Amino acid sequence: MHRLILAAAPGWLPPRASEGAEKVDSIFMLILGITTAFFVIILVAATYFTIRYRARKWTAPQPSPSHHLKLELVWSIIPTILLVAIFGVSTKAWLASADAQTAEAATTVYVTGQQWQWKFEYQGGKRSDELHLLLNEPVDLVLSSPDVLHSFYVPAFRIKQDVVPGRFTRLHVTPTEAGTFPVFCAEYCGNDHSIMQTQVVIHPDLASYDAWKNEKIDESVPLVKVGEMLYQKNCLSCHSLDGTRKVGPTFKGLWGSSQTMEGGEVVTVDENFVRESIVEPKKRVAQGYPPAMPPQSLGEREMQGIIEYIRSVK
Ligand SMILES: [Cu+2]
Image 1: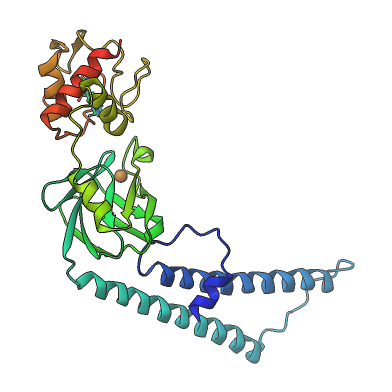
Image 2 (image 1 turned 90 degrees about the vertical axis):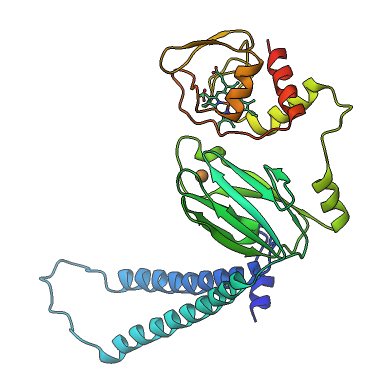
């Protein structure tokens, strides 16, 4: 039955990439169908009555017939039945997904939502800024936040889950479609809430997933290039290269300059200051900026790379 409804659904829904997404869509289409039907019926009736019973000339208000029992029963009972039916199918789908939540998957990925980015850490120590999953492999996402309320929203999974500071929330997901799908934050979480986006990459097979998991930064890539790639991935949203002020100070002309910190201390931007800014950004905060930079854990070569890159941005 719900396949039928879905087959009729045009391609305006986002792609579906998880178990359970179909179910959500079929309920959505069902509710949309019912509400559209009533919208049309009520509009047509209202228009008809407006014309049919319009006052042709002014007359004193007439006492209206006060009661029509049959009619009132009909318009109370039909919506009640529909409401209970919608509640029934929704609850059934919700319980099925809640059952899935209690199942324990073989793989766990820790998801951190923080102002203003998503971070993913996998068993075995791999970390990434995009969520990488394997097709048809159930996974538990363990979500948490070190700062404020966020919401992990993957339209293709039909999942929107609040990420609450001070508490872990587990989400059980089985990806059913290889590809790349957007991830958003769906809970307004401050200034740059809108840039809090990333993507989920679903690998079609274990070989591709392992290749990603084991990939290291190629040693033959020159340091400045390592830094540039890292910049594009992790820093671009907050630091410009052309002098524009974003969330953080621009990298243009930053290297070797003197910067005033909150509290008045003046520092010269050198290797150690850059490292400190990345590892412990809140230790010294640039004057006039929010302490909004998330600490980053970089490998030594990436650290050297980003230093080399900042040095190159004149
Ligand atoms: Cu957020």
